[in-house]
Amino acid sequence: MSLLQSLLRKRSHKGKRQVLVEGASHVGLIRPHNEDSYVYARSEDGQSVMLGVADGMGGHEGGEVASFLTVRYLLAAWNSADQETFTSKEKIRTFLRAALCDANEHVYQINSRLDIQWPMGTTATIAVMAGERMVIAHVGDSRCYCFRRHKLFQLTSDQTLVTEMIKRGGMTPAEAAMHPLSHTLTNCIGTQHRLEIDFKLQTVLPGDRYLFCSDGLSSLVGPKELCRTGFEAKAPADAVSRMIAHALEGGGTDNITAVCMFVD
Image (tube, rainbow, N blue to C red; front, side, top):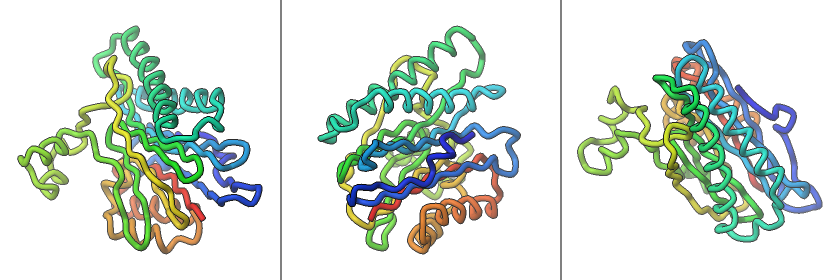
């Protein structure tokens, strides 16, 4: 599932920094439903943007509902906020924390009322950029990458069981990639009353490119291919379509979602 199709190619104006964003989602080749959602919104002056992805999970179509609701609550928070107050990374972080905690509480309460065996939940990797300031809020195993000066940087760390095992020295990254629990989350929106959010503070430089994606892309398209595609692409739309195509060529075993931002 994708949102804001009509907002996908926006340019900043008033002669300031140009920000181009494009997003797309594909159901893949195996799954019957698309449980991914993505979001992009911007301030009136085009200098503040919110963007990111949510990858839902749960019984029946619960994951689709969880990711959709999370994006909806993020948009509601954005529309009620005064983006001109995003004058520091701490203020942006406060906004993101409140918005994601609100989404978590709503999805958690729905799960509590339904009392189902497999509660719905979702990842969320969401960023707000205001001028050169950017804060990334991260829950789950969707990812954010930065393409800068011919190098690719992964800005988020997967909140999964195998990531914890790697940190403790019990597994190598190569072993983790093949482990049957490689996608088992230790944290997600909606399944627990308390939400643990990782934050990454980033200074945006001219020429930066950013990718937000679900694991349906990152698990099938390796860093070398991501790096090559991210730098070769002439525009965000080109990057998104090529990255999704690579994931489909790799088997399309999951829903695939990508949002790209180019900053000039």
